[in-house]
Amino acid sequence: MAQHLVLLLLLSTPAFATPMYSTPDFALTLAQTRVAGGGDANGDGYVDAIESVAYSDEQGGALWFPGTADGFDVDEFVSFHDLSEPDSVGYLAPPWLPLDFAGDVNGDGYDELVVAAPSFEGVNVYAGSADGPATEPTWTLPEWILISDADLPLAVTSVAGAGDLDGDGFDDVLIGVQDYREPGYAAVYAGSAEGLHIEADWVLEADNEAGEIDAFGVSVAGAGDVDGDGYADMVVGANPGYTAVYYGSVDGVVSDRGTVLETVGFAFDVRGAGDVDRDGYDDVVVGEPWRSYPFTEADINVSKGQAQLFRGGPGGAEPVAAWTHEGAEEGDLYGFSASGAGDVNADGFGDVLILAAPILTADVLLGGADGLPVSPVARLDAGGTWLSSAGDVDRDGRDDVLLSPGKVYLASTFLDASKADPEPEPWEPPETVAGCGGEKGGCSAAPGGVAGPSPWLVVLWAAVSRRRLPSYTQRRS
Image (cartoon, rainbow, N blue to C red; front, side):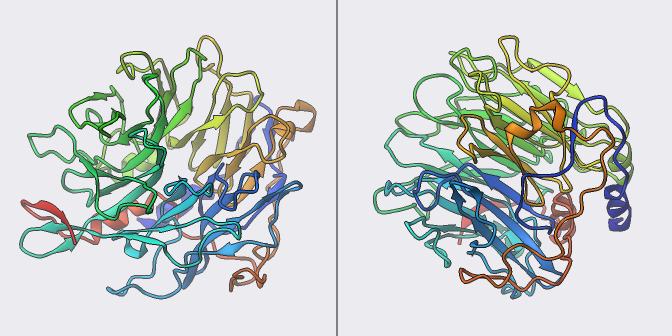
């Protein structure tokens, strides 16, 4: 089955009427990765980027690239999450481990980094400082355990900075945990002056009395302020009927005060979209590459996929999508990754990024008073299967775009149609990972790099590596 998935990634990119851009402004690495941008781990006022990467079949890790006045410094990265050694049960960690900027959880002015631990069993959080992120975990969140015939770890399938959910001035961390065969969970760990709490402050689960496979927690994200009350909110992805927005308050996240979104597919990626229509309420974008989980190989081959936008308002998120866009062809897996883009054209409206997985392209959609348009303003060659806003890398007042594997596109480039590629040529990355052997951590990349498995394989890996349990409760070890 994996061979069929790999073949999908080798499909050639078709010609598009939308302006197509193939050459990034910065190339961080060439390995298959997850990426996140927009944080500032060293407090210098420039946005940074982080990636989880695979250097070879036996080496991987996570890298931090500091922003500078000239963009990203690709030669002075820090390797802060070494995954080259097998974990306690003998697994080498895959390269698509979830990661994100956690925000400032301890109020010291530096953003932290959050990364799933090897085999997805726990979460490591690395404190920021004037010198950049710590190279060893500052806080380790305990693994989640299934209680039944045998203790087995739940998979940490997603991590995110949640923003300040309880309004105490400290950012919080959100994780999704499940084994893909049973109801899942989302857990919130609160920040404080003493640092991140290592016991979950709030645990959420879907209203799932039937015990269906809800896939709750497959994706989690901070949603911005969806209801405009001054508290950060959050969104949890799941199977249709279970994806939901939850709202922050002075008491934190209240589990019975949420909005179930009427998605049409498996919400593999959920993010805050920013205020797309500039009505004063942040919106939510949901990427749904498949109709539901579990899915078959046939589903992977034929699913067009779709992405949906849900508007915020004074009563919270509207349950019915304001915008839905489906992939053009069978197998497009449109919505495999979906994210707010920030404001790429500096018009005050939040913009959105949507990725189609097999053809590895990312659409840039501009927000407006009527929401999102039907057609993108630009289409970017991704080369990988994850995307993020990069923040304003070149400080020109417009937010930029970060795509795996480590490709940064500046808005000043992709909003200029004269710079588009009329007949895109395959992009040739550098022969080695940028900065290997650098003084701040280095790496041991094989020449040419080795692209790791695509992020969708995490779903299959988690499903086949844990046996079904008939009943359970959950606890933290």
